[in-house]
Length: 240
Image (tube, rainbow, N blue to C red):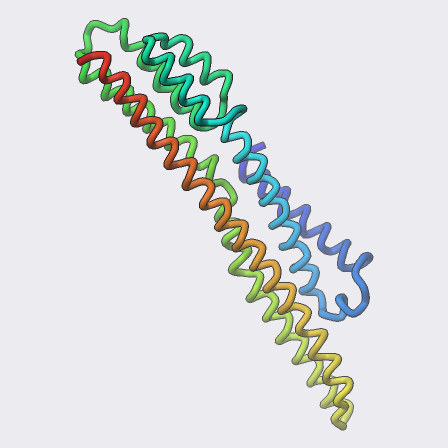
């Protein structure tokens, strides 16, 4: 499923599920927070969906086995000048790093049969292919991080909006009653603050998830850059 379609399904599904939960599953004191509570529920479902999607995607991007072991196997094969075995190791490992290295090694294997390019040109071409493959993998690693960041920004403001609207309704009701009712006023304010509490809670979860995934992706990116550099140096040394 394409990214745009996936986001539409998540947003639409979260909106429907949020409404159903608001109407039929919430206790009355939470429902008294107003219809914006349904939006907060939808946002919480979206955050949960994106967190699960990111966990599964990053696990897949990490490959089938430990990366240090894969890199050790890769270096051993390259030192033995066994490019086919190195490509086979990438096929077995899978994941973002293995895909990038495999693309570079396949291109290197193709160029070794060409006589119309010198050694420097061949290595420049391999470097270009690796960089291009890295650029193609990065959007996959960073997918939906902007959505998490956006929800974190919106949730608090959404909660505050619900609080303000709830307090407006509370004071309007008191004005119509013609007398100050401390109990009713306190109840109205407490109901209005439900929106703020919900918005802040969702924002905290979204921010923590965003920072966690950003840190994990930065680590994977660093490893990809270092591994790509080592592979290029290893291949380059064979032509010196």
